[in-house]
Image (cartoon, rainbow, N blue to C red):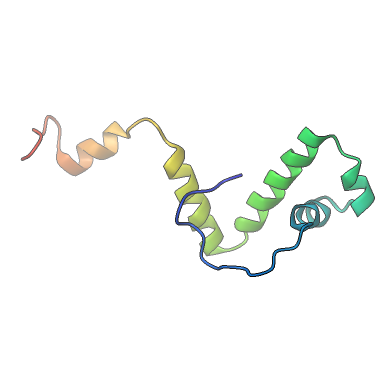
Length: 93
């Protein structure tokens, strides 16, 4: 599930126990019992897909996903760094 620390905006005092099932039902058109009969890995796949789909519907959601993606990158973007600091820039200058 895409996530990054600090990305939460609103606190909920009551959260439904079947929130993930509702996401999958809305996304797939299946009913509750069909979702309950899914293999667990298939269910988790659809939870993730529905979550990402819903986030992509709003500008704030897309920004959240962009931040999630950025936080998972492990390699530096050398071209962007060269554009910003110049080729062969010395540390501390």
